[in-house]
Length: 444
Image (cartoon, rainbow, N blue to C red; front, top):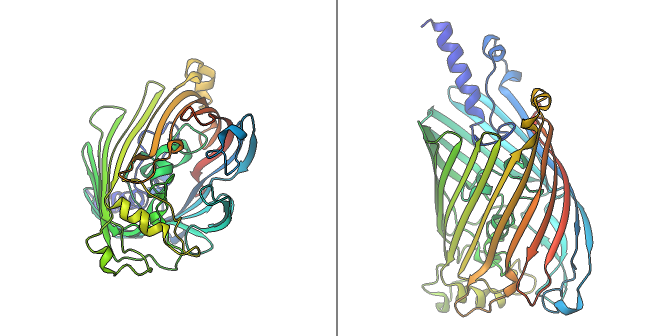
């Protein structure tokens, strides 16, 4: 092999390294962080401009909800039958920037605008007499979803350091709008866990043959921000200009691709959450309290023969949940705590399947259009086990959905969905219709 050939192969490998593959099951298009070098890129002299990669994704949604959004709808359901409301939303707009420094070194970053603005909002608290509250989800005016430096030694061993997505669950690992059928991300994982869950961390990852892996070390969650409906969802956020690291955590993920078109994945997380706050916790009453969060997850995806199926199952446990509930309820009103009880165990599961009916028409196949008709089922319970904490039945729900995903071109998706949320019989069920448009693609 000539020196020139070796240089070109190394260059192609470096460009791929900047944006590692993470979405083999995508119907049309890859994860935005994946960029494969073309022959033209390999054959031309590389420049600083060539080393820069820009991409992104975004979503715009309209939803009509055939149920009340009054904060008393769960405490006085009989008073809010046959109500409806609607919303326009920009769930996510993300700009991806990546750069290949050469010699296996690269940088990746994602800047996210969530719901069309900064991460500060006013909301009505259902559990606090309908008070208006300003919620600060994370300090800062712009949400930096990811930023990390990566060194690739070889495909089986890469090291990353920086702000990274925690790859626990199906949605966190694969959350772009072409990686789920619904107009919104799956509600189960989007409710009980941070989504997308990101932490300043260090990780080791790679892929060998049919196996991929990732190991990660990071700061623990903040139990002060746990709640009844959202379980640990808000525990990764920080209202400060830094992330408190009084406690630590670790997670791991394994992906298997042994069968054509099929990915099977296991992931898990464990870490302490109590004392990971600025609020004093050093009293003797808190001795021996750790608030250990443990999560186990299985997810899969199948994409072959114009058929796509995806699914997940997550189970989580929080130790010392009763103590943490009492501690949070006593927090001052001006604290960042929800001041709610939190369950010891939470669970969610979901499955979806869709078929591309345009594959039956040769003309549409030649135009590279796709039209998936899908059905979906979700179950979630943020208070699956309470152990002395008041159980709220409305935190347990089933959801049945059906709809379509139309790809007029590779990078654009038009989505429609009807969803029926089924709650305990004492509450009103929650049907809705949503329409959305999204894109996922590269700008250069």
